[in-house]
Length: 166
Ligand code: GDP
Ligand code: MG
Image 1 (cartoon, rainbow, N blue to C red):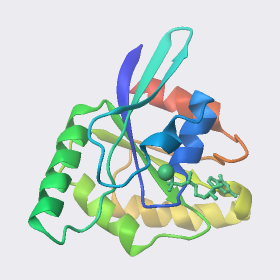
Image 2 (cartoon, protein in one colour):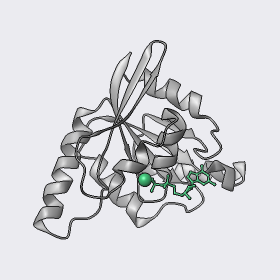
Image 3 (cartoon, helix red, strand yellow):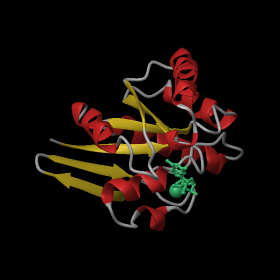
Image 4 (tube, rainbow, N blue to C red):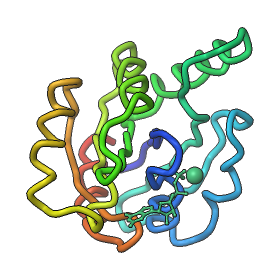
């Protein structure tokens, strides 16, 4: 199986850490300049029968200018073309305006979205359920997967979920 994946999420939720964990190299850091990259390959995960091509996506923010609106339209084109979107959130920070804005944008995209609850090493397991409920009320996610990108927890099950949509 082979396919394209976009990782989205507000700054500091752990997108680069996740990519580094999956790809096993420091590739993601290099394409971290905000608003300057478009449809670049961030990294490729290859294992046995699976190839996942991660496509770099500029940050999703409320546009404040014509250029900002143009950038957002490029992001939306990219998100429409990939096989699955990974929406990373920080479970310690909780849901913020930035997360809500991204969810609003996802409503105009047909691609299936996997909600990745990152940084579970920082919270009590019992606190995950109310967070999941909150997110489920906002969007019909294809899957919801808790991970710790930093500790490398639950990465394989997440890759299994991604594989389902390739
Ligand atoms: P990005 O802006 O979304 O690319 O976020 P980064 O990958 O740069 O991570 C932002 C910060 O969160 C860094 O200090 C990471 O070490 C930290 N971080 C990322 N993932 C985790 C995690 O699963 N657990 C913890 N405790 N920290 C994390
Ligand atoms: Mg980053």
